[in-house]
Length: 486
Image (cartoon, rainbow, N blue to C red; front, top):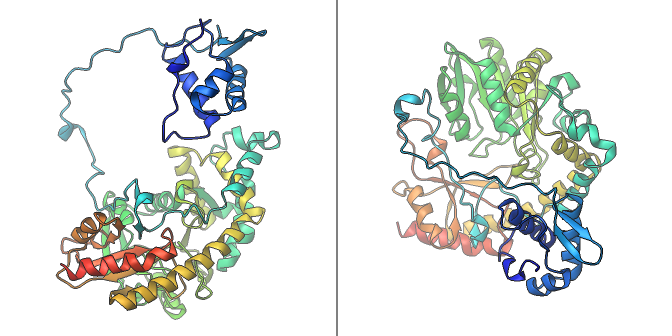
């Protein structure tokens, strides 16, 4: 007797290809003990008719399971559960008792509860997703990324896929960053001065861990990237927020106690202000006088569709005191978690050693896939495609804002993918965002970006990287109507 076809069903929103879903379904039946050694699988014809898929799809799934020893084939009799299939566990999990740990006493440090913006997992289902920093599947070159990933799985790249680099990185990716990415920012660096990181967040963590101690002072912008502030507050250092103006961080306001200055000069987060070149020179002079280090987060420099970006602060550095942080999260996709940092060799040596202690290195396959995607020209083509789309969306957004009377508090002069907005002072944008969710509109309240207990409540950010151009104007109208109703 064959296993009944009624045992098999495909989930309505199943992940992966139909072939992969069928493979997973059969493998889970074997691993769970529902299908036993020697039992016969339904014929490919019957299972295909039952599931409503092509027979070749079922045959390919069976063939893959046969290759992995889950199934065995017997002449013309069909497919059977293999004697070499993984054996399901033969034990009954113990019943869990009531926990007796006093977690208030056991937890030496707490990392939850800080300022953090939550992005709804179902944001793609929103009709008006003014969400920041998420990938638009219509703009991403998925076909070529897949080809690069497959190429990186090939025999030629076996070492890059399987080798434990210990504290090193994929030389192809490092070479591309050194020869192509950094020169666009006016930066010259040797491989020994470049470290691949798990995104910009990881780079900021490494820099803060190496440069700061309990008796040093970190200067941050106010408002700033909220995760950076939360990160620094967990160290024992002193954190001093400095209010930014329309040109970013004012060098003359830096305290004499500053040891490490964190800044986003090309595209201030979140106000999008661009620091003029003259002020950049003054910032470096002030850092030199203070003998302070500077950590430059140069996010979104690729999205300069309104004009050429200003040279990076690192390109003007003559002292070696600027640590440069870059990322592919915004230009490729945030789930990639791949970034890089550039600094003098003594600093990178320590960052490399610290990274090795924590996570060894970013996965070799991801590094090699990215290296191929960049070096084959797919990355530049995607940036051009994204820039054109963002320019059209930005124009539509500017027109909609003017039409419906919203107030822009910060508009990046080079481009970018978001606008920093302000509502009347009596409007709490956290509540506003909650109200708008009921109308399938997503905006980001601005309070978490500010330091201190008296955070302004009336700022908010709207991104335009993931919303369709034809939905921008009606979405802005809903925001304007909700603000007027407050």
